[in-house]
Image 1 (tube, rainbow, N blue to C red):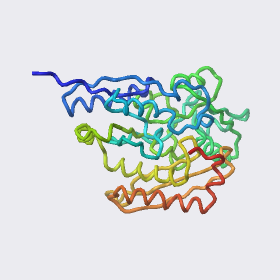
Image 2: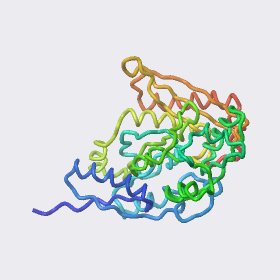
Image 3: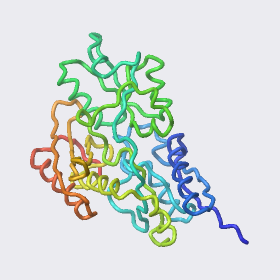
Image 4: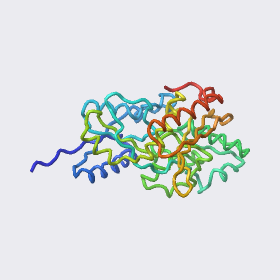
Length: 322
């Protein structure tokens, strides 16, 4: 009996990307009984040392993987969903969005301190992040506490970022909790930041499994990984981002989460846009009934975006990254 050929899964080379792809590979092996081979692909975002806002963060971690899919070099790819452009890619389909990990941001600070404890240091505090969205909300949080915080733009993998704290160059860094969880490094987190304080990036904590739109057999297999609620939630979040005409490096946060009354009764979508210095924020929310179809999720995101634009959100994003 001929052994089925291995499926080729494209992934970025970072430890986090390899770990995330390994999780999906294991799930596909269990579903199909076929071997899955990880194929490492270097993206522009991996080799450029410029800050994401300078290189136009949208798609810089994705384009090379999509090219490999379209050329047939790989069968499917795993992305961090928050890195995906909101526009559909010709010839490709988003075959699965597995159940979401923790969507929150996480603080890794010196001496095991929380944000409020750090912020009380009379000498001032330096916190590193590569995200204008985080800068906007952290600075707004500091303003609300009446304390002085300097947000410092940084790049690099998890080790590099946390290393800034260990070396004393920075007092703290902020990263996505989901990545630290997948790497088994949640013990280094000193505070999980409530979305009531800092809303995550649209799609944060979720993975995207993408393949050729022409491969019906593989699409059917990958559909077994899909979580309908996660898909509805991130569809609403990404619809908000798209309607704001903002890219993944813009200072936009969004989170769709359930309203619970014994069971899920509504889907609440929250959004925020702000200036990176935290001086101005537009923060609003909207609710829709559940279950949520794709069309309803898209409409929810667009409706909230319209309301935020009417309140001046466009003027807070600076130069748009499309």
